Length: 164
Image (cartoon, rainbow, N blue to C red; front, side):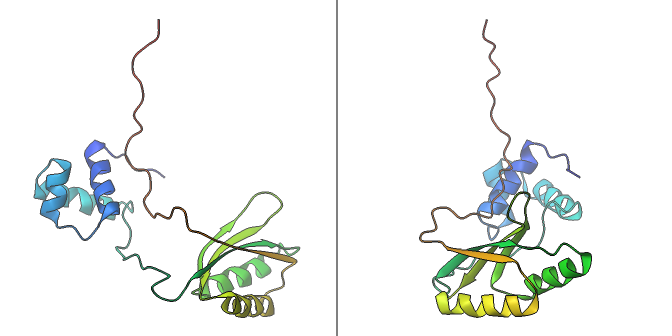
C-alpha cells in the first residue's frame, strides 16, 4: 500500500534521509516551510508507516568489520517448517545485514558483515549446522562503491515539452 505524498512531503523525506539529526527549524528552512507544518507532516508520515525507526549509520571498518560477503544460497528444501527455521536462524544472526528471497536459480541472497574470512567461516559453519542447505556460494566484496539507505523519494523530473 502506498501513501500519497506531495512535493513538500518528499522534500522533507529527502532531508531526513540525508541527515535526520538536523533540527526541525533547519529542515523547515531547507524545504521552504515553517516548523509546525513540517512537524505535522513528519508525524503523519510516521503514523502512516512511511517513516520508521530513526537510527544511526555506523562505519563497519571503524568497528573492525572489514569483510562484506554476499552469500548465495540454493536449497532443495521448500517446506514451511524448513523455511520457518531458516528465517529464524537468519534473523538471530547479527552478521546478516540483509536477506532476500529471490526468483531464479538462487533461492536466497544474504549480505553478511564480519571481521574477516575466519569470522565468515564461523558464521557459515553455524548456519549449516542449524539448517540444511543444498549449496552456498560466498562472494567477498573487494570495494564498497556505493552504499546508501536513502530511497529515491523526490519526484522524477519529466520533460513536459511535446515534439511536433
